[in-house]
Image 1 (spheres, rainbow, N blue to C red):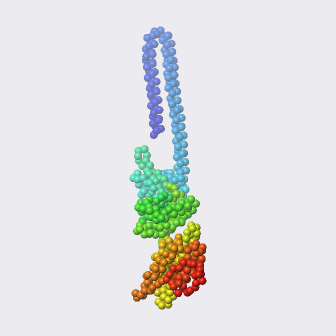
Image 2: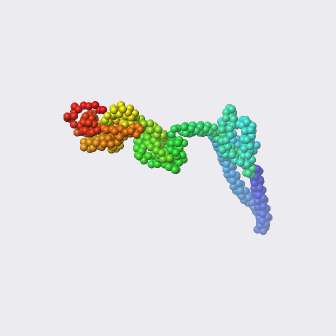
Image 3: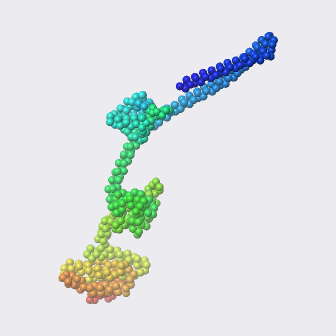
Length: 528
């Protein structure tokens, strides 16, 4: 079409030049002949002038024609050069486009309005397993890529919607069967191609092979489900929190509710309560110190502290965690377990190890340990320390007359009255049988005697109820020894308080005696 137009333009230009030349010649002949005839009447001169006039016309018109043709030739040459440059540019652009299409990492194909393949790039060949020569100019590729008729019909319906300009496809995922009978998942973006008149002449489609991506996403989702199930099965709570003053939670597992009584959403970003608010204030500084030490040494931390649940109940928890680098700085990750029952068992075991099972007071081993610690403290600070040796009078008779059950009841009752009559800093322990030790820190001989006398009066003034409303009158004999007056070691103090108690027994029982080296050093008597 452009060629015919160019030919018509050239013909028109030629006709114009010819007509201009004819017109100029006619005008020259008409006017020049009339002018010459008026100027010259001599026939010979007129003939010669007519000849020169003709040559002049030829020279002038030839010069004009030369200039016109020269100008036209130059224009034609410029157009030829421009056309050659355009053709070279078009060729380069075509080669570039073809290179881009073939070297693209994505599947690119172009269909005509009948669904036949016009362009099939190398990525399409690599992914599908079908070469461009196999599929070009044909619509058989649909049967190859989608062998299942129902699935193929659905894909074709979407393709036809694009080819008719009804829709543009974006992110449409389809499974194709490759040339080696494999299966790939392709995500398609496709739109219609239109000519200059706006009519649909085909479609272009870009496909991304997302098979591995979807497999990785599926595997990741499976791992996340496994991790979620694992965290939900934990006996406590898994967490991730910021290293800030609130211990701001960014993630908590579902075990949070059973542990704290709060839902995970209540703790995340401190929406309802901050973790720091749940920690017992008496333990918070120790926990912070342990966490800081672990972060400083790039190691894990383990801490035990008390936590207040939503109900107000105070429980013991054990936390194990580690500082790690997060997206916005340091975060802590770990688990928190409820160890309240373990703490209770530890307390019970501790009591079993330190308390007398009958009276509930400290046993002999724990009493000796406390006495040793108090002696070290008294010696370090230059203080006194008193020791009372308490023995129930005639206790053997109680067992013989009333039985050991009543005897045990008497021991429990008397021990409780003794414990109720001493200071909180003092220590009462059962040393064995019916004998008790009372450790009195920072107490002189006079003060120790006053305390011992108060204990004696308390026992004698309150008969012990037994059975059927009957009571037993009980008395105690008490020996007193004081550090450093009567001894420097625990063995010396115990021995000399025991001898002072012997003296009280020998002097009639139900009395208090202070250790004296003589003459009671050799005093002996049974302890009945």
